[in-house]
Length: 236
Image 1 (cartoon, rainbow, N blue to C red):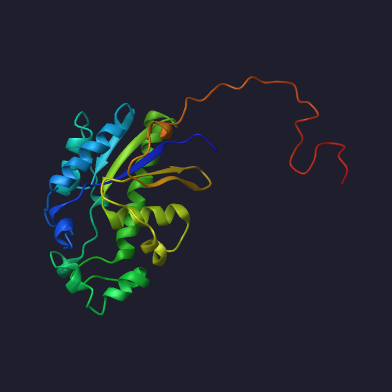
Image 2: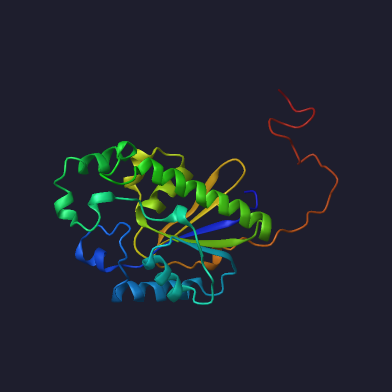
C-alpha cells in the first residue's frame, strides 16, 4: 500500500437524546454520564498517538467528547462534519418518526430523502466526504504521509463517509454501524480509499499509526525480479 495519512473517525459519546430514544439532530444535546465515560475510555486508547490534526463537528456533544478524549488538543471546527439537518424531525421520539411515511424511505432509499424543512441525505454525504478528503490532503501535505489525524462527528455522517470509502451507493449506508465513541480508520491512497478499521470500540489503536518510510537501496536486478506477466525471455 502506498504510504498515506490515516484518518480516525470518532463518533461522539452517548447523549441524553440517545438514552431517551430521540432524534437529536443539530439540537444542543450533551453527553450523559455513560457518554462521558465512553469519551474518557476512548481517550485512553488514543494516548500516545501523534495526532497531526484534530477536527470536529461544531455541535457540543462532539466538542465535549474531544475535551475528555484528547484534552491536550485544540480541535478545529469543521462545518462539513455537522450532523444531518433533520429539520422538523429533530427532537422527536424515534418511535413516533418510525410511523412517518418517509421513515421506510430513509431506511431503504436514503439518497432520495429530503427531510421536511431540513437537508437531503445526499447533500449531507457530499459535504462530509468533501470535508474529510480536503482535510486529509491538507494533513498529508503539511505533516507527511505517515501522519495520523482525528475527526469527531456523528453516526450518519460517519456511515456516509465509510460508504464512499467502500465505493458503495448511499442507499446501502444503513448496513454500516458506527456506535457511540467508536473509531473508524480510513486511508485515502491516490487510486482508492482503504477501510482499515470499522466501528472499533475496544481494540488497540497504536497499530494504526503508519510506520516511518524506509529508504530503499538500489540493487542490481536479478532473475527473480520478474515483471508482471513474466520477465524477459519468459515463455509466452
